[in-house]
Image (tube, helix red, strand yellow):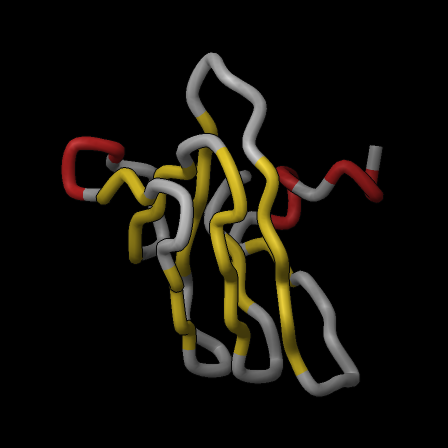
Length: 82
């Protein structure tokens, strides 16, 4: 998922598989981290970040107190605009 923000605090738990996570306005996987099952990613509101998964299926749980939204740093990355 390309760089984006959320207007509220977000908690992401990796339930299975592997999820990559990086911070910033551009994707730089070499500066990110791979998170395995049981990993917890905590992100403050309005903090630009990006995530990706590898070849295997990855299941995550996202928790937030709304209203929750996903705002792409680059609006052209938003599939809702296509």
